[in-house]
Length: 373
Image (cartoon, rainbow, N blue to C red):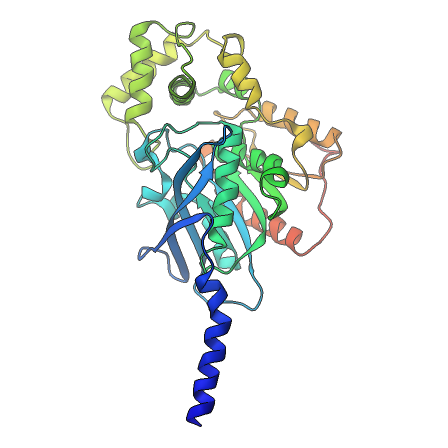
């Protein structure tokens, strides 16, 4: 009996050895999170990615999985791409005590998914965050999925869907565009985007909430000017340029706190200063915005878009124009109409989106709303 027991231990050890001993290509570290919700195991991760120029960065995020025994088959994966939290290092979602409350994608863990939530480059890491920069963001998302597969307890498979809201909707669409070429070892099953900025200049121009537009414009201008040395002279005078930089450096988007007086005054100043400014007509920002807008011809299906007609930050008309263009290319597109505010886009459509993603994993034919968009 003792020999039999020892033999069984040896067999188990051999079976476990490849997963345990396999060197990590992407994952740097995975620290268990004690604050994960009931029934969820989560890790705060650091992993390697590259930007569009090939520079390598150590970046961060969160990976969550069901608190269950490892299944016989790898788990399905959803990459959750977050909306705008800010561009400063301190604004990373993974650093927030409200991460699970404000990340609608985490609801999918209860449906058996591994959810991979990257911070993107420059959030919780000491480099400028490339705000709405498509290739840099897509690479960080795809490498996060790869890193999650190197966590034995997550049991993440190579088949994945990507789902995001607001800035994360832009990230999701860019991830879909880049997946086949950048990460051929992964298989994209579906793409879902809630209130996605698609035409960046049009989105920044047509947002009806002038104060939100001023803050988001400050994020974009600060990020792009810092990363690429774009001059702000065509957008604002020197005094207001300083305000733009300070707004971006000092403020994160917070849903449960009122902004400080200085922030309010800064936003009002930039709103006035940029009232008649269109970055779609100011170089080099115009060319850069076009290059990082989403080309509907390059986004593979199946595709789901959730958009509120009352959204004051991402114009419904701009999103609908994008969806029509995707339909014209023959992309099967599910369109979810909503009437809530921008910040609730993913939450309000979460149940339907998760169900739609699950149906894609199950191999069902995707519904197509192109005739009514």
